Image 1 (cartoon, helix red, strand yellow):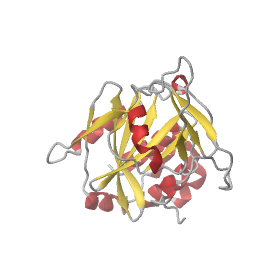
Image 2 (cartoon, helix red, strand yellow):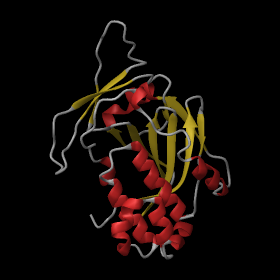
Image 3 (cartoon, helix red, strand yellow):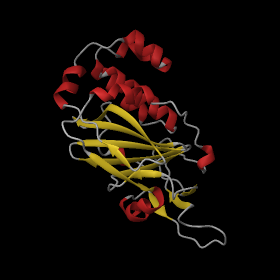
Image 4 (cartoon, helix red, strand yellow):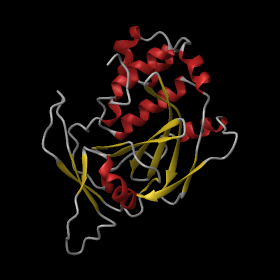
Length: 248
């Protein structure tokens, strides 16, 4: 699609996910910590706060928004439905063809934080989930992992959801401070030449494609296209991290 991650692309069904529990979520604790510190310079003129809510309560209110995900309500002796969330997810193969729905179980859904906003889209991966929200003039890509919630702040520029800052909420956190960035500042960065040597160090898989990268806009195009096929939370966070660094 012209190397763009369009708004339509955001609501595509997850491809080939597998069943997992909280114990399977292995995202390192320190991913994104450096981005959080660096993004402190992107200050909002006023403090804008979004509250959190637990996953089970949020999903009860939002699951009907997602065509690819259904809430499975079953009565099982000894299972508390507020703590153990069960959902069925439609999947697609590599050619984009629909396959059978699969069941996923989320343990400790009563203490897993998400943002208390209506969700635009939700995808389930083999080691976590992603929820996309719209808030004011920004988008928030939120990745649920064992230790909390990573939030990637994004701007929609020419139908590309471009990452510009990242932070993390732990399970005990009850709110998120919103990080804003001026759209003109991002546009000014996109036309600049890319540091391809640093890019190859950060992401070795790009070495064979580095001749396609001249500007920072080329970097955004390549990584957003790459991200469409990624089904691992760690890999998504790595890509968002690289894009944020590129546009600082």
